[in-house]
Image (cartoon, rainbow over all chains, first blue to last red):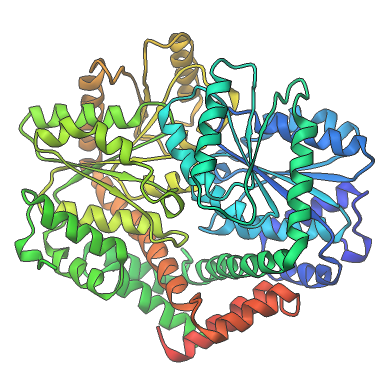
Length: 311
Length: 311
């Protein structure tokens, strides 16, 4: 494993190895993060989220290429909550990202550690690494619309929620959850019928929100042609500038630290307590399965046991 | 709060109150679950999951009505991972469920407890309640395609993954994750163009799976007209019969107990350790935000502190 001294944004192989180390977690990962800590703080991270099929990958590529064209270094993370089962569902996206890579962008698909909360913990660790090695811009793409997305949204600086027109009313409902965490709303595939009405409906929803210091921006794009990508970058820049004012970034950093501690804690507890090879754990699970012990009593018993041994 | 002695599947108001109690969690919820425990074991739960827009709500209603027509008692839970932010995104679904309710079905939207892992813990608790009060059938609908869905799939007896034709390649990729946990695959909205090709593609994917004692069934439906609903019920009955053989339900119960203990444990730890009103917690979070302490050291410190006080 390369020491942090050798890691730089210009060495994709060493970076890939370091990200794998973080993905696996454990003591080596924690040691690497401690070494990187002093170099953290220069990057701006942008999360792109929304339901499948709205063109997030294409948008990430378009944003990435636009930033590269300005001479910026850019890293893109594709975070896949379903991967514990599929083992690499984002391979298609990687192929699509080939132009971005060919022009010097760094791209990486990330899996979870298989633990609840593991996705946002692993993403936060990866963002620290990419920040420390000198990427000023990190794009994070997530698949799906569940709690995972909301969690991952909690670890980036600017949250971009992507939608498209005409995909049925439950999508609107699902989006209601993500709307609350959106700094920027993107209506992609602007050539789709119904785009104007959809934009009008979203504008109305935004106007109905209680006033807040940052009013989410609405941007219409067509990622495949590049239409609207400059406007999206401008909206991102505006949000970044907003964060620098009035100590907002400090407050954001504090909120994020709280979420991160929770995620790390959850991961640690699960890795430590729920070990299939541990016979005491097995016995307690059997007792729950047979109905002899209720799951709450079982959980307390397991926690007491580990607590005695020390964390 | 009504005692468990008064709870029955025929009293929706008392049931609704009991479910709210479970949703809130805490000691009263744990006490209720302990009282219910002896009455658990008769229900068969069916989870319906898949991306937004595939018609899960309509399918739940159609299944529910078909079971009611056979004289069965049925409860339907709509589980919404996005609700900590939207506070009731499934209201639209509730309206759509009106015919099901008018004919005696019990329906309830559930929110998470706001904690990672809280969704599957709360769902498992609700399933225990509905089981104990005498519902032989419980339908569980979830929104989204992330880890939440996979988690919720882990607490039901039969997992039905719903899709529709022609929604782009990333949906296929996302589905690859859910495919692994599917007992039954449904292609809904059979009137959509491309349905035949989609069914063919899914059949091929199923054939490529490694052989297993249960081969997932593929059912084509059009929930709005009721087409395919009887075939879906037959597939569910076949899976239920399969579980009764060779002690499979015992093994399933054991796996589920393990997942449930993990979920409960995670919920307990977060509620206990991550309390915003706790000054020691606040100080540690500040230290992480300022970069003085890394999140792993912070998590260990918090765990040690609570461990001393006892769980």
